[in-house]
Amino acid sequence: MHPAFSVIFFTVLSGAGFGLFALLYLADLFKLGGGMPGAHVFWTGVLAIVMVGVGLLSSTLHLANPRNAWRAFSRWRTSWLSREGVLSVAFYPFAMIYLALYWLDIWPIVRHLSGALATLIAWMTIFSTAMIYASLKTIRQWNTPLVPAAYLSLGHFSGGMILLVVAMMAKVDVMPYVLMSLFQLFVAAFVKMIYFYWITRIGVGSTINTATGFTRAQVRLLDAGHTHGTFLTQEFGYQVPRMRASGLKVISMVLAFGLPVLLLGLALKQANLALSMAALLSVFAGLVAERWLFFAEARHVVNLFHGSQRC
Image (cartoon, rainbow, N blue to C red; front, side, top):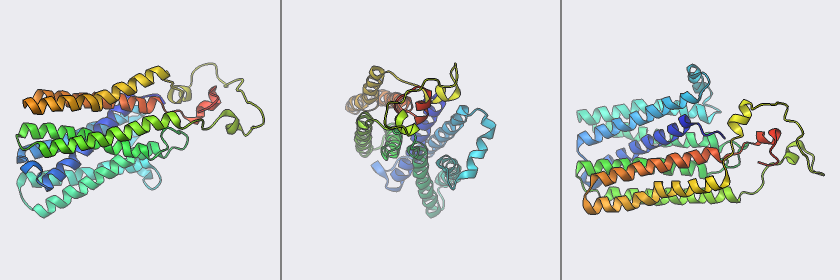
């Protein structure tokens, strides 16, 4: 698949925003690290909402006509894309009620109820985003439960790293946030390593023979029916060299998981906020590389009718 930067930006940023809000609410609920100051909680929640909003807006840039984006809300009964849109909109009122009541310091029961609903919707939205891809049987690399597992774990890991930096800025007991971030790091890295291993071992799926139904002899496409690239070949026929993909996998794992551990260790040892910020930037750089590979390595079966022998 052609890796569109707008979709990469959307999935990474909105996933981190939803994960950040969910973890922020849980940290507030359980007073993690003794509880952060009110201003830090409020503005971190605002940051999470802004990240989600900017990510959602960027996703419309991939549309041929962004003015028709509203139509995606009409098929929520059958479409994961529509469910994602509906849930994203439903997230905002509950999240804003939670932050408003937190700022005013009133109605704690309503505040926590709104925060809990916003957190639940955030989890459902990340899952719906992942299922847009995982539900596609025409793309073997996406049609696996590992995709929603990776989206959920990576969204919470990146959001948790932001929350850790905020906790360091707030000068609260950061050890619970460190342990939470390390746990999320190992879970996300484990899921991603399994996914990288799995897509190299899934073997041959559809071939031009199984697609046409002729199984007694080798079928070969003689003419694709066009002399120039089409929308299908441009969007679904993208191919990344194997060596380049392998190199990017190593780079993404090092930037997203390896380097942040080293930088966090130095940051905690030296009480250096700049090093923790560097760790956060490394995480997002690694996630961008990871998400680029997620799209670039996907092979749609439509390629069988444009020259590929197998997908």
